[in-house]
Amino acid sequence: MASGLGGVSVGVLDHFNIRTRNLAETVRFYEDVLGLEKGARPNFAFPGAWMYSEGKPVVHLVDISPTSEPQKPDSGVVHHVAFVSRGFDGMKQRLTSKGMKFDSRQVPGGDLWQIFVHDPNGVMIELNYEAALEQGAAPAEMADDIGRQ
Image (cartoon, rainbow, N blue to C red; front, side, top):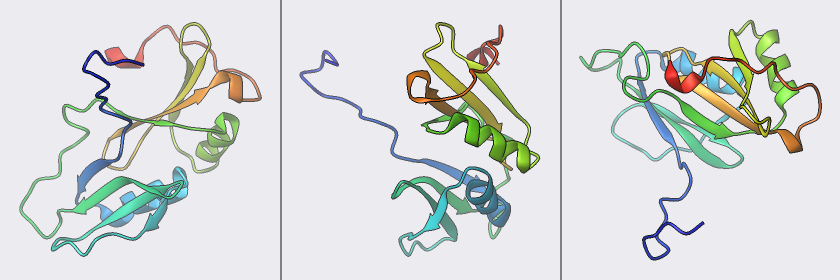
């Protein structure tokens, strides 16, 4: 898609960063709930972890517990972080088996299915599934739009 800037493009999401006082719990969420893998991280002068999806470090965690920086209660001005995902029914089963609260929705028009879940820091994670690539039942379309919350 042309950007109107002579072929310049911002590209796709590389990673997002969470500053947390709950590093171990946050790592467990991204591993056990979302299925990411903890992997290699540069030798920074501060503690943290990098969480990988399909070989890419998409979630960077910084442990702020050794500092006086306060833990923010949610994602601040960032409303949510979205991933292009696969396996809609499998993820719903995974979240249910782990006792996680989540919402599943169908974007009006039916081309996109979504799951919304919160990490231990209150960060809203949006998982997007292209309906044409998924098998199984579509989620019930919800009248409220997550972007308005």
